[in-house]
Image 1 (spheres, each protein chain N blue to C red):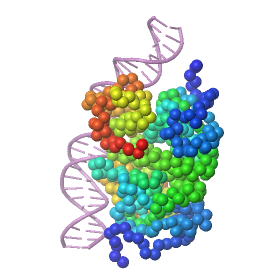
Image 2: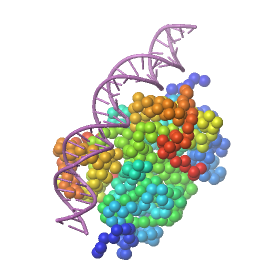
Image 3: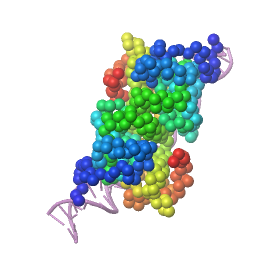
Image 4: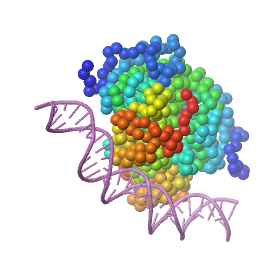
Length: 250
Length: 250
DNA sequence: CGTATACTTGATTGTGATCAACGACGGTGG
DNA sequence: CCACCGTCGTTGATCACAATCAAGTATACG
């Protein structure tokens, strides 16, 4: 099957009832009887090759998405063309929601790996919110979570060193992937499709400096990396450098 | 009347029906018949002298607040004790809401000036959300707005120069105060109770460097400052330096 | 193979931090 | 009323972290 260069709708989309990311996703709290509604409202599943933009900041926000598979990078573009990364979206994350109809996306989203997303129109999302208070509450909770990571980013960029910021991003991804069962717990290794440039975009650094910091972390025996994978050799020390606190909510 | 050193409940709180900040506040879209409910649910009005903490990060988030009068600084504290400013809350702003019951505040809030806030328990807020879809939608919209400013902060801290960041904060406050009628449009001057230290906290800079940048902005004829006030002498140039875009939503 | 992209390394520069001191107010108490 | 003190603003000297500039080396892909 040839890989398309653009977003394409999937011919045989999966069914929500058997969705493997459902327990992490928007409709995790939705009672089973609402699932049919969720699936009927789901506009479509889309496939994105790496480096494809799902949506772009300041474009009309017509759809929200649940990540079904793959990694996406959320970012904002500066006037000089450089990017500031905001978040790495993983399977189960709900992205691109706009609270106000006819509003614009506040950031762009680009596939890092091959990715599959489930799309919902904003209009449908708003209707579901109005109809089901539990969904409304869940959306505000998702927004609240994202808000918290956003505040954490502000603190990191304003006050933390390059080393702390990079260590934090890695520790955060490690734990989020672990929750999804994507971490090899023996080797403590995880997939890591981010380029050093993307890691720099997330941490407000240049790719050159990102490289030097990563090198130091490896030299200190904290982590090791092969192609597209990272192994954490010294998790306690990674946490210490990152000042990462494990969140015991899940 | 002696000024108290701590938060005190106001003896004769104002009534929501005649609230002057209502058109900017949480209940702006609430139909008149809900106002009685809003007022009955409002736990109390509180008065805060300058430098008083309204709530502190990681404390149990039992209440949300509408700012009735005065300025508050929202911030997060770094492990070394330094602060990273997140937002300046002005009259009408709704702060401290936690989407999940029994959750914790993600940041601290401190009065910059004398301030009066209207408090609501999170439990009551959640009940109102569940009972009135229009309030639910409005809360997600408020959250969305704050999310957007938070993303803007991340972009600023990650990519913009000290001068741009400071100019942006000033331009943003100028326009938000203008919407509230707190700007003298002839002189283009506004109240400015922030210390240079606080401005530095908001922009991720030290107070020393903040001082130098302000000095340059004054030297360039962009602004002038007296005690507790700032006048914008060259608004177009301030916008240009800040890369500020006027938001034509209101 | 040839070409892109990603990663690596060194040399130099620059923005903003740090350290240190002093001046201007404004509030408080003797 | 004035002396005192604490906070805030100002300025200079020096330092450091990360950016920039510039090659050069793997690696993957077509």
